[in-house]
Structures are given as C-alpha cells and as structure tokens.
Length: 287
Ligand code: SF4
Image (cartoon, rainbow, N blue to C red; front, side):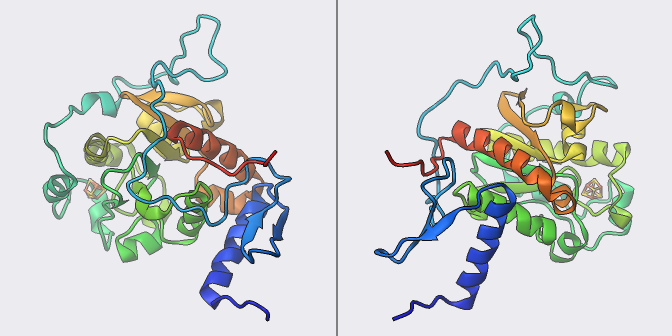
C-alpha cells in the first residue's frame, strides 16, 4: 500500500531537497525496504536527511582553537585580521561583565532609545535560540518580518537560514541567532556607524554570555562591524578567523543567496567547516 505523509512533512521534505539541489547535492533515492528517505550513497558529505541532534549538543572532541589561520596565511605564518580602519574594534572596547545573563542584558536594553532606529521600529529584535548554544549566527539587522514578529530571521531569508541549519543536522533551537543592530533600519538600509556603536555592546555581551564555540557572521555588514574593516567580504569569507578566543567564520547572508543561488555551494562549504569544528557528523559513503 502506498505510504502517505502529512502535507507539512511533504512540504518540508520538498524544501529540504530543493536546498540540497541548490548547493549541488542532487542525487537522492528512496530506500525500498525501510521506506525511509536516504541520501544517495554516491554523494559524499551529504548530511543525513532525518538526522536530529538532541539538545544540548556537544562536540565529539575538543579541538584546538588558537591560533586560527586561514589557508591564505602570509609567509610570516601570522594571519592578520583585515586591518582596523578606525581605532580599536568595538569588540575590544567592550569589557566582559561577570555573571552576565541574557535576561539581564535584555533588561539593561529596556525600551531602548539609544539611537535613531527606535523611531521607526515596531519591535526590538533581541535574539532567539539556545542560551548555551555552541553556534551563534549574527546577521545585519531585522527586516520587515522580523520587526513585525520581534524575532530574528523569520522572513524568506530566515527560512533559508533554517534550511541551512537543518542541513547541518541541527534545529533552530540548537543555535542562537541575533543581529548587529536590534531595530530595523528604515528601508532595510545598512545600519550606520553611530547606530552600530550604540547597539553592538549588547550584542557583544550576548556573545560573551552564550560563550559559543563558533560564531558565523552572515554577510558583509555583520563581518565588517565585528572585524572593524572596510575590506570586501570576499577577502575573508570561508576562512577561520579568531574573535576574542572564539572561532569566527564569515559567509554570505541568506538574503544574498536568494538573489544569487549559485553562491549556496560556497556557503555549504563554509558550513561544513563549521560542522567539522563542532564535531557534527555527516553520513559518509559506506565502504
Ligand atoms: S538599534 Fe539598538 S541601540 Fe538603537 S534603539 Fe534599537 S536597541 Fe537601541
């Protein structure tokens, strides 16, 4: 008798398969005996479709964090972050606060009016996810859907980010997602320097408190803010950087991927590096 799935499951499966196709993993088959859907054994590195990570997830083994060097390290062997263009980075300028908590940070933020973005916002989008996550994603700022719902990455780009997270074998509740600024810039323009300066200390407190093993910066604005550079994202995308004792990976923003689907395979390569660092396993070709 033909097996049927609920519509929501079918839709999820269809979205997931489409995402895998977009990142260059195209061959799937349905295993007759078990009736479950498996990825093609011919595709090495393809994650198991139904792999679930129970929270809290832990890396399988500790790996050395510092010093982190990209493959393109200069002959001196010392990789330098993209040069700081204007004094100390905001991150360096923000001291760690002992016994900080996300709740306290949110309370300190309050009904924030520290910058002009408060005038046009509907919601402060503080961040969402596992407060002890080992993986934190940082975007640029809330968009219209996020402003309306008060949650990060819930629009079309957010749906794609969810697919990326699930392709890694995780769920959104396993990770923490936030933005450089917590209020939507008008017309989705990039946040301005003074707005970032006012808002980012709260982001850095969130990072310190969550203490993730890996941070993934989504897009040029988040990366340039954290690295305090004007260099193009292509100069450091996909390379491991060190950021206050944590590993930092810069990759493209999901909104960019919606406009440029061909870049999904680059992002998948970046995320595979993150998976390796976190000890997340992918199903390999069986011998
Ligand atoms: S963007 Fe940040 S600093 Fe500006 S008003 Fe919103 S919460 Fe406050």
